[in-house]
Image 1 (tube, one colour):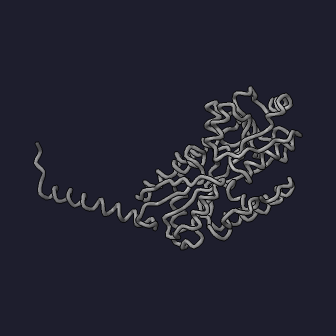
Image 2 (cartoon, helix red, strand yellow; image 1 turned 135 degrees about the vertical axis):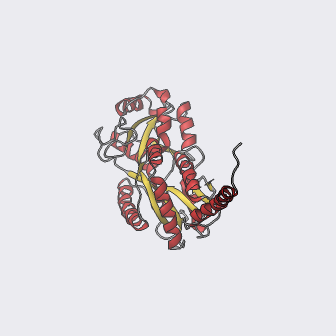
Image 3 (cartoon, helix red, strand yellow; image 1 turned 30 degrees about the vertical axis):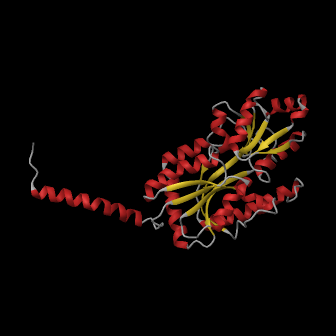
Length: 328
């Protein structure tokens, strides 16, 4: 056995002592609290929002050296999670991963307990997402024309499940019914997971939600996505047509996913979160996975997203008014 010199021994010991110190310094450089970090998700485990948040938590943990926890505050189409964020301490330990389907409810539900422009503040856009209209594999439908013919033969089943009432996962289905001249009745579900289960079992004929909620299940044959809401097919599934391509140009809605913090979170903490999140979202493996889930990755500054959200809320109000929906 080779003898190790005293100098080598000291060098090895010194390096070992420095390694934890270097790790601590790296963690401190994140600018985030040296505490466990929490990501609030407003939908049940297993849905698209939850799957994405859990996937992003791991590289965040590796970058920051903090334990990153997912806290599912499911219910009320995601608004419970946002209300929880609104009331959370603005100390940088809590953020929320929120879809536009939740934010738009400020226009449709009088009881929504937050103002998206006052009670929370954006950190960064994570990406854009199309709304998907899908059918149960049990009804033997593969295209929109097939579905229209099926509806005419089954007038008692002209309903669709929605992952969030009072959001565009609700309105897109209603708008689709108007465009095909067959009224479709929304049925509320507590997120995508129970809706997918009922679609797979044939308990409901159709469903509407973000494509991130349905794409993996579409590929697995549990549901059949027959069209989406973009002006062009989503990057992750170019074979699925848009309603525009099928001759229904009024069926265009583009949603998004955003990370928010409480409104009074200090700017240095917002900037620190933005730096870490944008770095994670730029990782090739992360972009590949999110694209596969149906999210077209895109980031922003807080100011850029605030401008976008303000413009979208104004445009969405015009759409909501056009279909005659009144705040509940």
